[in-house]
Structures are given as structure tokens and as C-alpha cells.
Length: 212
Image 1 (cartoon, one colour):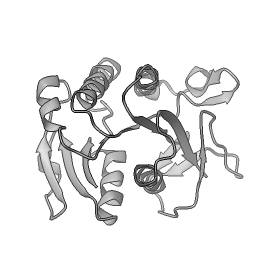
Image 2: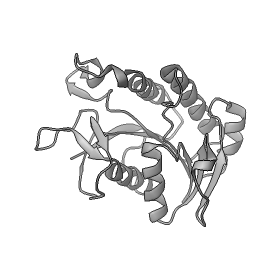
Image 3: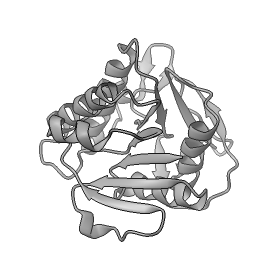
Image 4: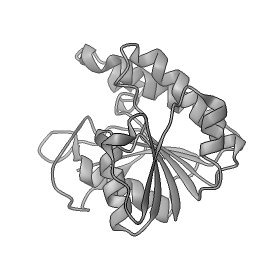
């Protein structure tokens, strides 16, 4: 497939980039700092600004799918910057009539009990609140879309570098807890789940989650 990957040099974006290239997809990486990536036979690198809707719309035209790993972490006003950026990504995807938009979500909007999301629990770390609120807002925005073919993949509560095992569980809106009592997934296996969904769609118009 010919894929546009927004945020390809970030923590999760770089793992998705590696996994997609290993599957022989053709990628265009759209990043704020193109000097962080080197182009290869199947990878082109472009500077982009998700806050510039007109330019973004022109850049994202003609792809089989768009994957957004945009996070907004680099900005001091993380929540406002992310919400503005994801709104533009959604608008641009609709403008170019993309066949699919896949979005990296957060664990904060997953439920730990009926009606209780991780983000609303007393012990949720303040350091991650802005980005978690942003991801929850993104999910709400996507769920309002009636024509866009979207999917959001939320990680488990902990996502960190580890091994690519391709052995994990999928869920919907509830936080997955492993046999060891932890909610975790490696960033490598998260990328596997994202590319699996791209290649064999099973959650169109839905959010799902991945964990051990």
C-alpha cells in the first residue's frame, strides 16, 4: 500500500514506520523535522505542519491510507495543540477522500469499570493528563464522523520499547489486564496490531485496544 504516516519520527510513529517498511509498504513520512529521518527506496520524507490545513490537505492527497501518530508532545500547550492538529488531520482526510484513516489513540479513554475511564481514576498521572485528554477528544471527534472511514487503536496503560512477539490480545473499550496484573504492550507489538488492522480491516468506524 501507499501510506501517509504523520508523526513518523515519534515514539510510536517510528515503530509503525519500521513495521510498515518491513512489510514492504511504500511510505511517505510527514514530520515537523525531516532531518530526523533518512529516505530509502520505500520511504519519502516531507516537512509538514498539521496546523496548516490547506497545505496538509494538499500533502495527504492520493494515498491508500493515512496513519496519524501525531501527539503534540513537543508543544508546551499539548492539549490545545493536539486538538487543533487532530481536527485538521480529520478535515484533511475527509477533503482528500482517503480510503482509511488510522489514528494512534491513548489508554486514558479505556474503561476500568462500567462508565469509569482510566483518565478519570484518582491515580491518573498528571504528567500525562493533557495528552490523554487530547486523545479522548480525538475519539469523540471521530465518533461524530458519518462518512470518514476511521479506526483508532488505543494501547494498554503502559507502552514501552520491548520485543516484537506478535502475540497479544485485542479488545474494544475496556482496558486489557495481563495475567501478571499489569496493563502493558510493547511499542513493537502495538505497531504490529496497527499494520494488521490496516492490511485486514476489522475495526472500521471503531476504537479498539491491544495488550498482553
